Image 1 (cartoon, rainbow, N blue to C red):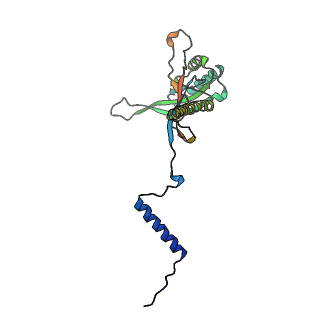
Image 2 (tube, rainbow, N blue to C red):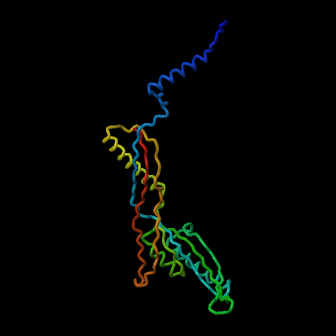
Image 3 (cartoon, rainbow, N blue to C red):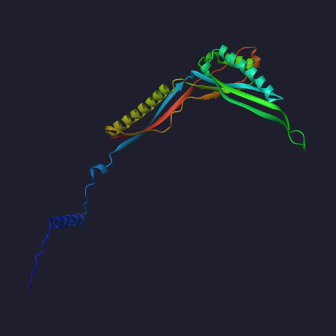
Length: 247
């Protein structure tokens, strides 16, 4: 009976050893250590709120002229005369040229639908022209609007209040929110007897929205010629952030 030599390569030896180790560890109920990158550190997740009470410093008024006549030429002519007077009144009240902007202009036919059984009859044309004017003089805002109405404006769509330096306001309110979140995390870490190592992630839970709110205009007919009172008031701007701190 002839014997035959079996030649083992180094790679076969290594593979055999790995299989043997795996069998032994399985029998003993042991597991291979997880890679360091797979281990997740402990974290504290908190939310922070930043609130700033804002007093508006800028007002934008939407107003205009609407005129109608039997023909388009007559309607446009009547509108142009009134609109020029309104713009002149706005400038005289202190609104700068760059603060006045045309937002819409339209010409539309007018029909009479009251006659039953007959097609609607064309009775004239209506011209509407709207502008916005921006002013930082909020104390004189009522007088500005009254002057425009007295000059011929018969369309006042309201007043929008906001702040001019939106970037500075955004930075302030987000800074407050982040500091609030950090204070909460520090308190939680102290109570748990751990230390905060670093920020793992930070996100805005609520987007920053600049303060913009509107006020309807009503002509103060009972004030005996006094300017219509306009009170901008204040508004709260709020931002919420969510931060995950690693401990």
